[in-house]
Image (cartoon, rainbow, N blue to C red):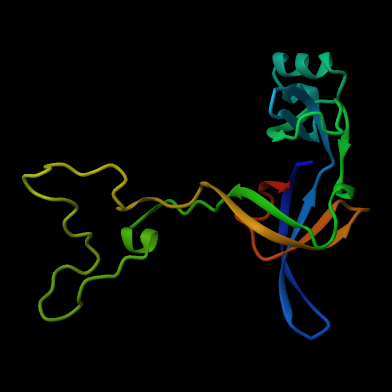
Length: 204
């Protein structure tokens, strides 16, 4: 059964293994999440999960009506994912860190840190022009396309622009430890975003 849960990034630290090697660790607070919707299709089920119970006054009337219809508390974040057909799940089931096991591999998605408008060197790691011998092309992008033919710049040309602030997925991160009392998961390595960002953790 595929498993997907929502949580937030707490921060980073490090631990030492038995050999004395320092291992970079990201601390995540995952769940508890509630299954709010299940749609059955021929090849898969579409499962919607909710995270973080909030006051109904912070939602719109149609959102409050949705939760009242399924007799569940109001949740701030909702996310859908595909699951195996006829999996052992049901509407209102609470998902916790008990679903994960130490040593398992997970994929974690989040929004990377936005860095605003950036030049082509920082954004795409291009090299600069010569700094001596009368060169006047130091950090300029140079030519961005041909002249007469085709006479235009192709879409997707790597140039200066908005850097960061996009969904990034880091795959095959290993779970190092689980604190079931505080819904904390420790994974090896780093994940996108800054502390407090909402993340999605997937396990196949």
